[in-house]
Length: 161
Figure 1 (cartoon, rainbow, N blue to C red):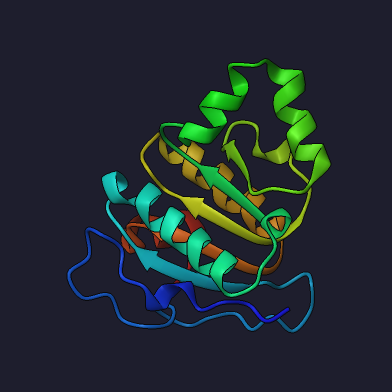
Figure 2 (cartoon, rainbow, N blue to C red):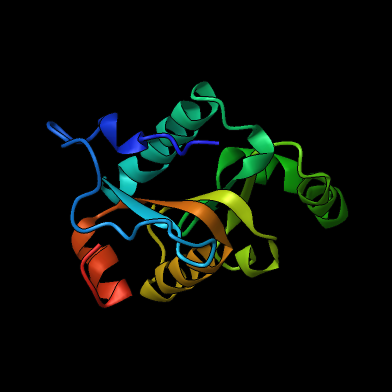
């Protein structure tokens, strides 16, 4: 399937987001090197930007099971809801692989690879952002979408994205 261009939709807290990644992109030449797209967003707007990216991915034909969303601050409401039924039920949803799966950065290393990984840098300590970006890059098969402050993301990655 063709990766969607989620950066073409502006996040709610960005007045004028430019289409495409904000900086050089890594072409998806192999499954080990996903394309990276950055959607500029504040910590308060990163989760909304990630939701918009997921919606665009699904609207463009991606199946829900293709998508993993990782958060660095507050958990996504879906994850919080599912965890209320217990850890086993939450991870059973992951293992079924038929829906978008939402994970906190602290447990994201337990998630399996998916075609697309979306990271919402929605707060949390620098260590959470570093963990999320490292795990996301390793788990993304074709596309890694990062929603957050470009300066913070670049400082964590150590290079321009």
